[in-house]
Image 1 (cartoon, rainbow, N blue to C red):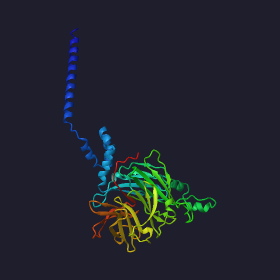
Image 2: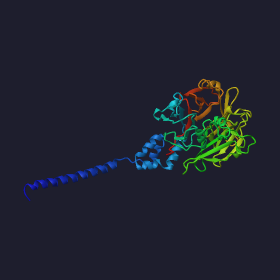
Image 3: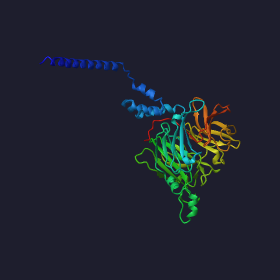
Image 4: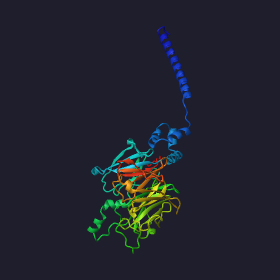
Length: 432
């Protein structure tokens, strides 16, 4: 070995030793960092995550595989829903762009009902273009945090109200008829030799969950067009049902023979409470009558029945003076009297009703465009404030009313949304 090679070998040997020392140092440092790292137990992680908004929880799935597995587990989803169901609901406000109808733009936003007035979170204002849309927009009730937004000529948009994620559902038969024959009366006049398609101009969709099977269902009950005569052997109505989250999502018909000659009113929105849907009866055109009854559809057995309205409603009360809604999970029925007083009752048991409050529409008309002839709809009762939030569809405002028996005080709760308001409880229910 020459003298010139030795320094090089010594240098290489020194470099190897230096690398060895650096590797050991890094290992020791890594072990110290691991010892200093704070391990958060899963139950603590779950306790924190369950209190967060849906969008935040969804983003935390990217933190680690363990968190992703936890958030996607059925147990966590059930606990998340249970926690938020004990809070005040959120409010989904949906409005069509009536000013710029040519743009066909749908706006939706979420409100928080925690304080004396609703707070709008502008981060969650969403807009969507509606293609080839004519007519009216409507929303369903909320079921497991999901809401349906639909029209008679566009597919139903099933949306998680908290996350904004949505999917489109197949067209129902009644929607296909409206697309093919947008004006049934004109069809009848122009082609007298051909039997017209039997359907109603506009009806509303019911949305609920079968607690026995755990399946969410859409139920669409509507009158046939033209109205069947009293002597006809066929039913006056048709009903379509869609089972969500099945392998094959397809509308199917169920029998309406039990309804006999009764027709369904096109207002108000179908109500789901205590395992059944409820509609008011109307005439053959869907308009209210003074012989109003309740149509009841059991979501599990899928059987119809027609019952009398509750005893506190006058037997000759016109259907447009009767309000029906789901108030905090209970069936709520009200009647608007001639003196503009509206009494609200909810069903405690099968045949037991309890009066909860009454409203003077002369006092609320200031916020509802001077309207005193249409019954108001209570959206929810704020648990922490003992106040009820009142609405009137396609009016600018929401009004709060103190449930104290001696109170006559009304407050403007929310102004300027001009549309349809749907209370909902946030859930992690995925629809995609």
